[in-house]
Amino acid sequence: MVKLLSAIDNRKCDFCGTCVAVCPTDAIEMKESVIEVDRERCIGCGSCSDICPLGVPEVKS
Amino acid sequence: MKDHYDIVVVGGGPAGSWTAKHAAEKGASVLVVEKDRDIGLPVRCAEGVGANDLARAVDVKPEWISSTVTSLKMAAPDGTVLEAMPGEIGYVLDRKRFDAGLAAMAAAAGAEVRTKACVNGLITENGRVQGVRLEHLGFDFRIKAAVVVGADGVESRVGRWAGLHTMVSPEDMSTCIQFTVAHESIVSDTAELRVGKKLAPGGYLWVFPKGGRTANVGLGITGSHSLNKKPIFYLREYVERTYPDASILTIVAGGVPVGNPIKDIVSDGLMLVGDAARQANPLTGGGIINAMLAGKIAGRVAAEAVQAGDPSKKRLSEYAKEWHKLEGRNNELFYKIRIIVERMKDEDLNTVARVFGEIPPEKRTHIQLFKTLLFKHPKMLLEFGKVYLSELA
Image (cartoon, rainbow over all chains, first blue to last red):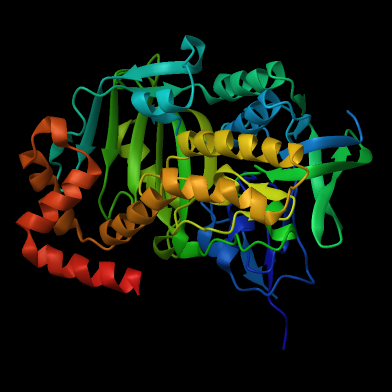
C-alpha cells in the first residue's frame, strides 16, 4: 500500500497555523514563513486539507 | 538575554505580554520570546472588540483604535437587518499598535522582550519542564526557567511538547479568511454581522470598519462546513458582489479554536494562555479580552509559585481554576449555543432574527436571545433540547 502524505505548497501558504492545531500526529512544523510536513509522522488523514482557509494542503501518495 | 529566568513566555501577543507584565510586576524575572520579526505582525485578527469588554482588561489608549463603532447591524439570511446592541460602543483595533503597546507595557514592568526568537523545544528534566531551546538570529540557546508559559497561539506546540491534549478537531476549528477592503460604500461607524448558508454556512461574515472607507471583511466557518468549498471562495464571491471593483489591501487567513473549553492547561513548570489554551469565546470567536484576563491570572500565579519555590502542576492549577470560574465556564455555555446555532437552517435563523427584533433593544444579548427562543418557540426548544442533552451526555 502506498502511504498517503500531506503536501503543503509554501508559495500558496499564509502561515496561519490552523493546520498545525488540527494535525493529530503533530506532524506539521511552521516557522516565520516556512511550513514543513514530517513524512514519518504524517498519516495522510487530510485534516489539514479539510480545515485550511485557502485549501492549500493536498493529500497524495 | 540571560541563560536563566524565573519565567519564559513563548509568544508576544496579548496573552504573552499580559502574562509577562503581571508576573514582572510581582517581582519575577521574565523573558518574552516572539518568533516573528515584529510584535503584532502579521495581524491575524478581525480586530473588533466591545468597548466595555476591552475596559475590563486594560486602560485603552487612543492610538490603539482604528475606528469607533456606534452601530452593529446583524443581517439574517432573508435580509432582515437588526440593530444588535443599541447604545453599546465597539472599537476596531489597530492590532499592530495594540500588541506593540502591550509588549511595551510588559517591558516597562521589567520583562525582557525578544523578537525573531523561535522556541523549537522544551528542556525537560525528571519529568518536569525546566526551560526552552531557542533559536535567535541563527544561534541556538538553552534557557532555563522555573515556569514556561505557552502563549504561542492557535498553532501552539508548547502544550503538546509537554504532553497536554490541545489538538483541535476540524469540527471545533473555525477556519477564517479576511480581506481589508477599500470601497466608497464603507461607513466608518457601522459594523455588520451576516449569517446564512450561502454566505458562511454554520458561521458568520463580519464587516469591521477601519476608517477612511476601508473595512476588515471576513468570514469563519467550522471544519464541518469547509470540506468542499473553502472560506476564500465564499469571501471572494461576497466581496465581488458587494464591493464591485474594490481594492483589497490585505488578505489574511487564520483559525480560531471554538470547541468546548479544555481544562488541562497546566503541567509541572508549564502553563498555557490565550489561543494556545483554546480560550477564545466559542460562539463569537473573540479571543483578545479572554487572553488578557487569563494572562493577568497566569502571570500572578506563576510569579507567586516561583517565589514559593513550587512551580508544580498542583500549584499552577490555581490559574486554571480561577480562569474557569471567571470565563471558562461561560465558554462552556457559549460552546453549546454555537452547536445549536451552527445546526440551524436559514429559516430558523430568520425566525431568530424576528424574535430578536421583539426583544427590547437594551436587552439584546445572546443569552437573552437564547432564553427568549426557548420560551417563545417550544418547537425549536425541542430541537435545541436534543442538541443540548446530547452535548451534556
